[in-house]
Length: 216
Length: 145
Image (cartoon, rainbow over all chains, first blue to last red; front, side, top):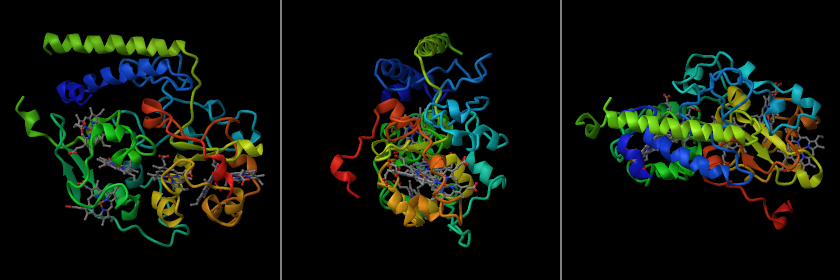
């Protein structure tokens, strides 16, 4: 798997080699009962497909730009529950939130542009203590290196959310790999659940040019 | 582009399109939104709809830190063993859904809005979709609060 990702992904975006793997996994998951089929495997299939805007084709933990699925039809809310119409519709609420290059809501920009001002404590009487230092992960094969920015994370989270349970606070102290991330460990504790997913948008993490790359 | 790359791109597109069309053929419900957590350790058994917790809605109003550090929600769908007794006692959801910070616990159907029978899971997460449904129901012995 690692090999496949290393070969071709950095030059041709979106990483085709990677999508081979995902497409394969996707086809495989079709066969498994009770497992939502994985359609983000289809790089050619964008949500701009005419006529199906009301169908959430991907079933991810986010909707990309243009996908509109009412809560009552999203598959986990019970349409027979009257209160479902009292709940706010996400696509209305977040209509003007900025999105990243993959059409996923960019919460970092949403926060920075002041579109939202989430409380920093229960009553809003405390402040966050963001720290501004980056960790560069270099064990990325031929992919660009990974920049982990403490600043953007500590605007949302506190140190104890990550240290020491998810990451030992020591540079190089954690055996992070892409497959661990996709399995929900390390960065994958949040990315792929609440934060933008590791299977799209490689460049948001892999953002630092890599010598091995430049030589090609 | 070299012809090898072109061939590869073409190949992936064909696979992609096939996978896509294949998936359209499979009846597939549209699914929930923006990091919803379905919590159903006890609700079904108690004859209530499962609770649905929408992250997108709450993160507009609170930083992650408020719930995951100050209020002590562990990073694990279903892992907090939330019960109504604890909520009414002011813990978990009840720290806010108490008629002060947010509407109170009487609005059962606002939280208990899930499709009956939906297991506890983090909706649409990469793990759940690509690897395996990672959530086992709590054992009967865990039900004793």
